[in-house]
Image 1 (cartoon, rainbow, N blue to C red):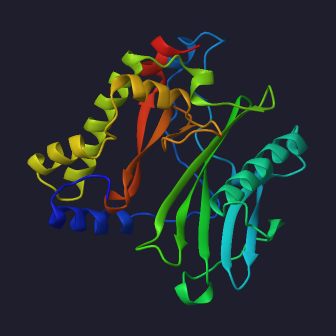
Image 2 (spheres, rainbow, N blue to C red):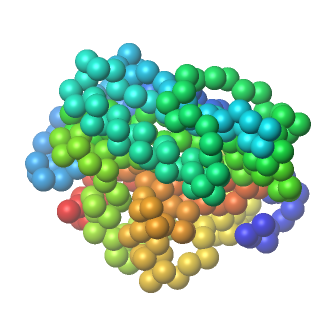
Image 3 (cartoon, helix red, strand yellow):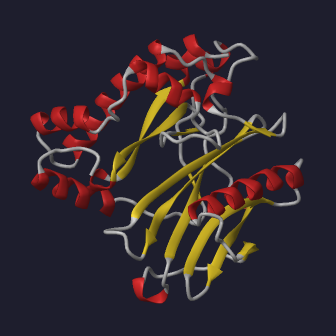
Length: 288
């Protein structure tokens, strides 16, 4: 465990947090429609709220990178745009390249399956493989004329590990430019950004603990304990590397119609990761 906190509380929270985690094979996230005034306050050069109120799942199909061998059971589902979508081929290539990289990274270069396989459901069973298993789904967070953003989550396990690990990663594409974008492509990250993230994490994580039956005291303790033990300078460096291939700090970012999500690694017992949501209005001072 990364953090030393009261064991009984950890166990209770782990059960509550993990039981609420659902792998989505192809889910569109419902979001509230921003009011017109908030949209108009954003210059054209900044990332802006979307006028879309739902994700249209009909423009996607699901593929699956998979390997069914004696050694491995790998299932990594991901979306592909249908041919009717503008620039579908280029966008799909970026998604496939990302999935290929993530699967090979997880398997330490040992993935021997097919990348563009058909989706397949799999019941988690430790007896069916000798080395490692991965069962990943995806959620489309934003899809409009400006940006496409998707998150991937599920479980990953090596046979000799004490328990499976929660997997989470994300991919955001600038649709107009046809390129992958990172958190630091969109925002200036400095100590003020770090302070905002710390405060939003504490506020939202404590609310989650209380929502799941924890006391205010428990929420306060866990809100402090769960956040990574990094000083401001190191955290600035870590956030600037977020979404980069060389990132080693465990942060991921994604965008929705109204907010930016920053996934923070909080350890397996507390749920694996926690997504801090920060509205575009709050991030305007940092926008590039």
